Image (cartoon, rainbow, N blue to C red; front, side, top):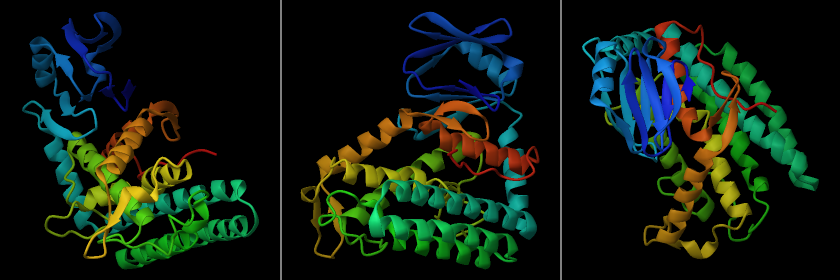
Length: 342
């Protein structure tokens, strides 16, 4: 699959060869694709993928970066030639970070994306709900555009973060209405973390951890520094840019994962325990269920609203990272956060 001049390989045991000035993709010894090397900016290999030595040499000579990830999306490493285009990208990242106006614009885009996706989740749930739940969800969804209007008028990062906080409060105040099954076992009394104090918050926090790992890998694959963000303040040891990138994906990925597992009764109260400190933790079987469901979701095909192409969910963080890189290079006027159609 070629998106944004990047060849993504997600089928295990795929083989890549050099043929003249082209990259040949074979699966089970059958040629599936042939791409001129000058059409590519990068190649991303997920899982066990074979590259011939001749192809690697051509990629190094033509400045086509090759990134290697595990099947679950964890970044392993990157092969690139002497051009080191990622170095220039990081220079642009640092300049944007230091430029208050550009940094603020990026922060606003990320918060706007999160608010839009929270509204999307609430609207869909309101259409399926009844009675008080439908009313409360619809009311909260109506509040989101008003907060989005406020974001546009904000003049500082702290003000933008304040709008993000207001949106999160509005969203999580009605989150309990999204739980349709096992309501007693997964009672919702608001968002809590560090540590989570109930099973539903434990599920959400674990989902965020999985998503954060995907976003860190995506940024490393593209060549960006995960630590230097625009919405989240820089702090030693904190992956601020990865936290930025995941903000607008949280409702669509981690929140939806937690709700699906509960509403489909794939997890139950017996899979959680309370520690001496009061933290709620999952047992091994529940954790495996969450990870398996997360990986299955990555294989689902959706239409990317900005690219207008069908892509697996698992590529969305990578595509968001590449769109962010293009914004930092000046190829795009503004960062377009992922927002599903409908």
